[in-house]
Image 1 (tube, chains in turn red, green):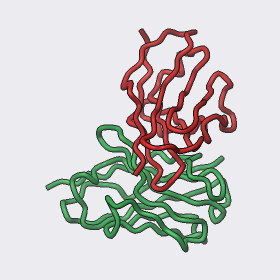
Image 2: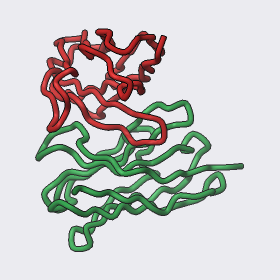
Image 3: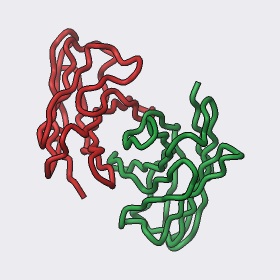
Length: 107
Length: 120
């Protein structure tokens, strides 16, 4: 199985800041990475697929980039409602596998 | 609106069995691949089963192969997960998830989950 590593379990930020979350695949996955947001008590919500495609209705302050093994998810100007856990997932080869998550917190 | 509602979770003994259901609405169920994804107490997400739109093809990771069985009833818009020989590591919140479009392997919609607790 392909391992997905999110090296930061927590990241601190302030409202209005630009923040980037990284994810590294254990082998090359082309651009087959999705990103999800999970708020407390809620199910995950799809934000990005195929590394950089924003899902329907997702605000444009959320962007994704990367290819091969290294991927980045960026929020251009953090809003209070963006405080959540963010997960990456590779969709290159079965089984789809997820990173352990990065929790975005206020400084 | 797309809606996925899981049911059937509960407390079960080691080695026991449980059947989960997921009632789907708001979309043409028979057009989409579906999966069960679980979230462990440590908050890790793991795919446990996937099924294609007509139910003819299924996928399981090695961790559950031979113990879990996914199925669907397109006439009833319902997805199922039969779990047997349950282990403590199967304790998790089980989500029903709809794939985005035909052949895609990312999950566009998730239910609210049903909790499975396996105890000694």
